[in-house]
Image (cartoon, rainbow, N blue to C red; front, side, top):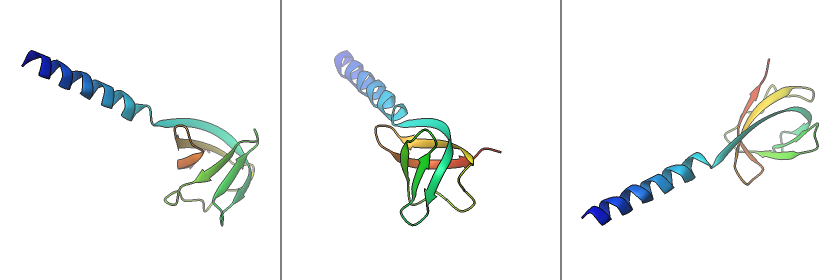
Length: 83
């Protein structure tokens, strides 16, 4: 019984650590934005694809944005204009 409980706790801890590692955050200045393709290029040269649920209206080149992305990808899941 103790071995099963230990294994369950270890598995839960591993799952929790994986869940917390799936998102990254960053900030940058928009160099260009294409609402049709949902592509955002930052002044540092990095290119990002905004997920369908991300609102792009009101964003323009020169805006500083804060982003959340799926770790290991270039897909933005949140974009917020920094005032």
